[in-house]
Length: 122
Image (tube, rainbow, N blue to C red; front, top):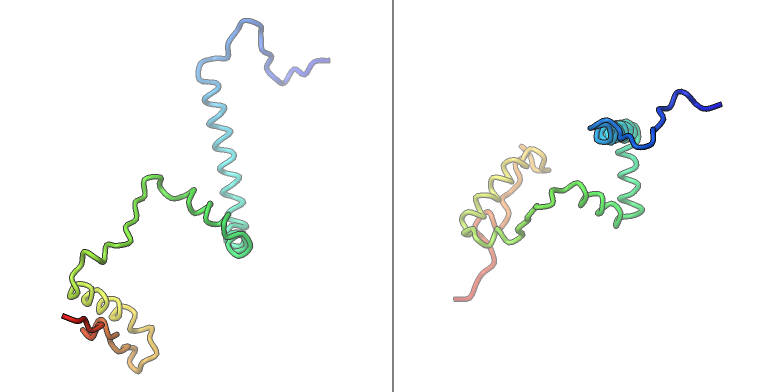
């Protein structure tokens, strides 16, 4: 006996317009919902395990979620003056001060922020 619950394709007839797209979208949505639920239940632990056991796979995951057109410049500090770098270091030290080991939570200024950077020969 034939299964009457599944729609049967008739020879020479197409599926209604949009059915394939709607089916793919529904399937995609269902899949993403399942992944979200699994991630909520196990995500952080699995990510930590992958990072520890398979760092190459961990980096692939990170890369897959980054925007494709992400441009990172590592030498942006080269365009700053020494005074601007010192100001930024002082700002960071001010923010991090409460977390320091010093009494009152204020760490001493680093040599660079205090203006005592490396000596250059003129």
